[in-house]
Image 1 (cartoon, rainbow, N blue to C red):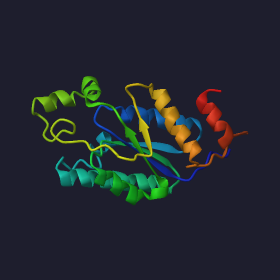
Image 2 (image 1 turned 30 degrees about the vertical axis):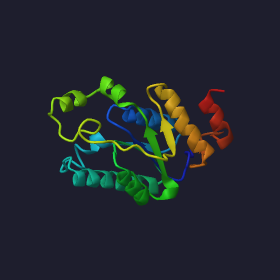
Image 3 (image 1 turned 60 degrees about the vertical axis):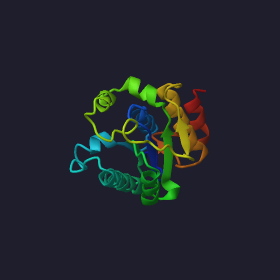
Length: 202
């Protein structure tokens, strides 16, 4: 049985803690895998417990952390995967460096634009509470700034939309911009033309 094939692409989700990056990333990977695309998620928090466990949170260490994430994403991309990363990446330099490592044509910057007050209200890991108590130094959004992208490829508003809608938005962007091609899955052929219809529910 043939599986869907595609040129690799890196979907770089950036936004503050609690913005919904990981939730959207997991749902997006599941959706892409349902189309028989090879897709994987790279979660910044998870990578910090393994590959990047030797790094702290100084400016230099944050830069190195994201450099490593970008290189891992690029490796998956070069093998034809859709690599979906979920990292805060608060500085423009972080995202520009990731784009350079991956390559302009394969990099999609997605800004998960969620207001600080919404992120802090969600606070799924209790990090904002700890930061407010002074237990976490240089926490992004509290003691350290988040500089949003000026011209991201795509912007998602998780406070106003469901996860499914956000995923639809990303997939539709990929289809419209022909970031990847769809091959055959079993006896069926998922064409670019009807993938949009699948996404829209028609």
